[in-house]
Length: 283
Ligand SMILES: [Zn+2]
Ligand SMILES: [Zn+2]
Image 1 (cartoon, rainbow, N blue to C red):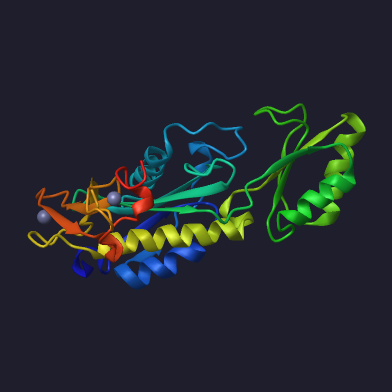
Image 2 (cartoon, rainbow, N blue to C red):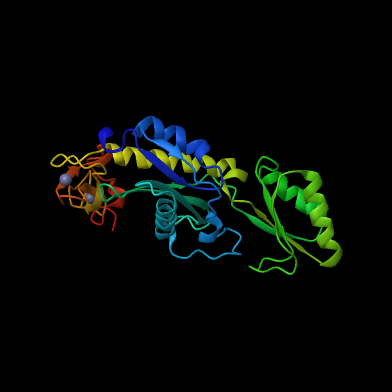
């Protein structure tokens, strides 16, 4: 894998200091040197505060950012990340942070995607009518290490300009009181931009590690990096009756260059399913 990326410039499409966590990991594992383009406005690709809508879904938006960075710099290797916050797909009451990191290598016509679903996030919002309630919310969200956004109301175009990146109690107090003079209520949100959110920064580091792990796995036939799980085969046998269950029996890896597929049975060493998950033992 190393010779594919070693000594190349990798452009990192960020203006929110993601290079702080991503660059050391990428440089060490891939042998690239990470460069951040000057004045690269990633807010054009959507904001968490909804004032700019995202042009595409999460993965496509990350791709658009990476391609814009390639065009702008003339480099052939780019990396971009994109986060998305919302309820956990399996546990709707649990907020989570899905982070995607995409690598686009034009020289080799290759794309590798790393992904993590982090359940550690302070993604949250509240509408309050007193400064006291605003300060209690702030404290719960890890303020002031984690920034806050204040707006008159929760819409994409609030009545007053939204104030982002608030990181001091004095500023928070000032902004909240200003709005409470004019409106009955004020809306607060956690600032999810990486540089204002150390918890999110950690999730971005994890997604970067997922990307590196994927890039490190090469096709056994043509040596292309990114030999990764493409699909799953279900039917893991029940521990008691041996009948097939919905559990994962095998991961199917596929090379994106030569299309070689390889079946890896019993991922994570799990060879039988819990009879509680079996339709025969526990109908
Ligand atoms: Zn291959
Ligand atoms: Zn069974």
